[in-house]
Amino acid sequence: MNFLSLLSLALAPGIAIGIYVYLKDKHEREPIGLLLMSFLYGALSTVVTLLVSWPLTANVTIDESSFSDQFLNAFFLVALVEESSKFLFVRFVLYPNKNFNEPFDGIVYALMVSMGFATLENVLYTFQYGVTTGILRMFTAVPAHATFGVLMGYFLGKAKFTHQRGFYYGFIALFVATLFHGSYDYFWFINYVPGVWVGAILSLVLGVWLSRKAIRLHQDISPFIAKDENIPPSQTPLV
Image (cartoon, rainbow, N blue to C red; front, side, top):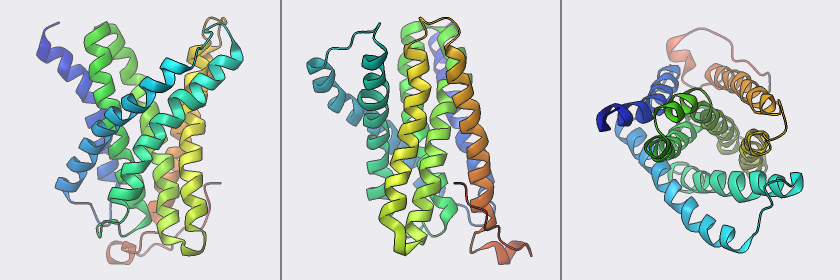
């Protein structure tokens, strides 16, 4: 496969998911320029992750056959570092922006940052390992990163517009994204155990289900909903 075909394969899933969530923002869509910047922030968060990970991995020895070592690797060395890198851009760059003016915007911006991260990562993996890896990641790793972003964004949306518990929801945003990311990675990291990879798929399916629910809930409580529809807001919490 030539360069352009490989690049298209690597870019397509992240862009497609980004467009899907953009179209779900029914009541007050975000500026395209800011969304593109969010995507670039996500790519930049990949660089931040590498800068943090290099000294950590150089000083921590992981026994790949050890369940406990792989737990440390999945949840702390990978998931926490990667989700913290994304979180920093969403919480401290995009969160204060005047266009972040409804709970659903948390989902949009966190998703775009996550897709920027996942897309750059996908380009690196696809060019290193080839077409099969690109196709596999199209249905696994990239959608997984999307769910981490949506769940993070759901709680950051609540953080900004639930003033009494803003810090709490901000913490939950990072915690939930890290929990799902770590769970997904952990099952892949110990896939030398026959059939355990199914746990990663189940984690992904649960993440997709919760993400769809999160999108629906924040759609239904948009302060702009009265301009478009006469539908009473839903008060059902995600958790």
